[in-house]
Length: 275
Image (cartoon, rainbow, N blue to C red):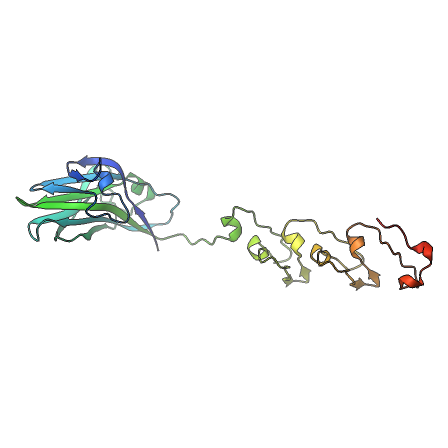
């Protein structure tokens, strides 16, 4: 279940409430968290109301189960003061629950499971068109106050898994081989991807989108990660040695003849100038 809170962002359908602490009624009730006695709207010895335009939703999707319209209110007296929530949708005004106020700030709300204009479930277009507010009732010689108006939308959030590569705005480095898919998320461990599946070995160079500096002879494949280990790759496949110099495209300083294995066994003319 997901929730979205939207708040006033302008004057709406109607407002005849008095204001305190700011230059517009909607600015007196839009803050988060509540600033209580710092800014508020109020009614003196009368019944007055204010309805405000609200923020739109952004990227939220999913079926909406209900909305709750909140007012944070108090009164100057323990008796004789009331409030109720209002919504304005489709050109019609709808009243919420009537609440008896106390001398302490408290949150009150009315819940609408469906759009009262259409009689069916709320849509996101309805939410973007919605206005909400408060009505304050004050007996003679008493005051009612409202410091916050906001709406909470409850909805069935669409299940979504986001990868590190999506968060970072990078495209996945995907090399599908058999049933194997390696993403940036996995490769950011900064170690060789040693995962094997169906005899497949994927190297760091493949994951990072680099071409392997590969000397392939018979069944042997040497990866960048081995070359960067700064030691000769002494691995042999079918009797063939592959050195760093071969992998990097350099000429060996020492060329080994057929039956010789030590530099000291070579005649002088076998020692070349190298690359």
